[in-house]
Length: 310
Length: 276
Image (cartoon, rainbow over all chains, first blue to last red; front, top):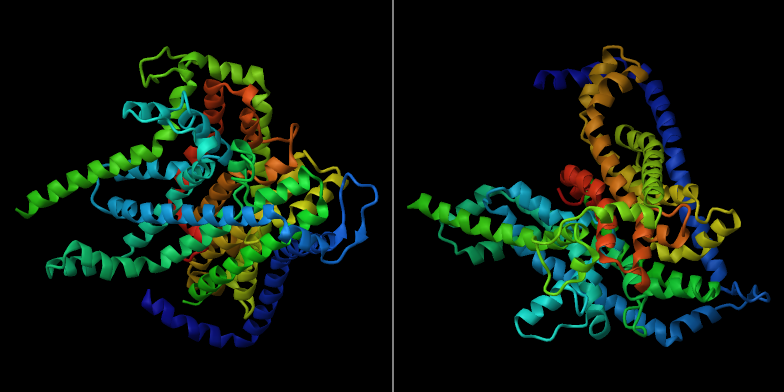
């Protein structure tokens, strides 16, 4: 194996002239092969975004035949000063923050547990991963009806077993209900990534710490947790990207209500566009969403980029 | 002494892990159980866990009540079609970036990643209007296009990370033995790339199958895949728990099986290689 590698540079040097044209040909071929993907993604990014920016400056309502005048920043002013915007921004932050907190705070101990010697670990792994593969509309409706229904739901029955009054989840704590559903969907993702990171942790290092009589807690704080810092960051960033635009779970359970209690930015824009047909204002909202997502994306891209060089 | 401690520890962690796994899996299990109940049993308080009248009639009525097979067919066509087209576009691109990288390759990869970061809701309005004007609303073609574009960055990225792991020495050795590019492709690259191709295909099939933003917004009836079909159960008058459960079980069963097969590749695909 080693000799083979040694021979290669010599071989390439010998035919360097032909290799030059070959390399040029290769590069041309490579560029050609890359074109369709790059072109499509460029169009996919630029055209809708340009249209969104354009629509955002128009008075444009699908129900209003007089629409189409240029109104400058009026839509942004309207969208940003709308009380619904502030409420939905707050709801978005609560939803994203809570789901992140739950998935990571539950995900870390769960990953540590699955990293232990466990009989039938592969089966447990399958059970833990399963929610991630359930389509959002299914998980939302199963949770809303079979589990969280105030009379016939399983949670209500469990509450009565303990002599408690069942919670009417979607009337009394609608946001908490959405948070639980979404957290259940994303817990497998966080756990799986943290588990993968744990498994790459040097076993000898852990054993050495154990032999030296380090208590489990300090092994965790000084060895495991620093090792997990990076995967945790990745989990936070990737989940945030997806959680910012949670839609289906709200669409099939609460429809944003009661009132605005479960309306996040994504749902607000949807309802302005496809329920009130206010294209201008929805476009302005869309741009706000793009800006928020880009702030998160900036950090994620940097982390991934650094890893690409390593 | 040491052995006793490990056995005990193993028992404790096994019990803990199984309990956690069971709790997390329970909603799915409960859904499957409910799908075999009568509607009356499904609503019953207190609920019965195993000793109810088992029936498969929900599975039969799901098709009668609504056109289940049409939506299942739509899901297969849309998820399969968008994934295959994305693969066809991404394979050459990922191949050239992995085997003939330039100074700009890294920037292109990161830029592709950033297109995935764009929230779909940010471009919902123009896409909806374009689709309306071109008659693409509620068509399978329309959904295939949008899901294909949406997943293209992930497909390119996953394939790139797999292709990059193929040792270049082998290629150079083949080239020195006089292999042409086409021979190199067929006899050397393809066999080594198949596992990566398969897991990329699988993961993106799952993502496309479960996609529920564009499908909910751009389809209503004719092209509606299972995500939209299940959403139709959300109306209060449509509330039949046993039938909802049966329809849901059918909708997630195939993808759950595929997902279990692809779980090892999941991390790589979803973190863009940032966690190994």
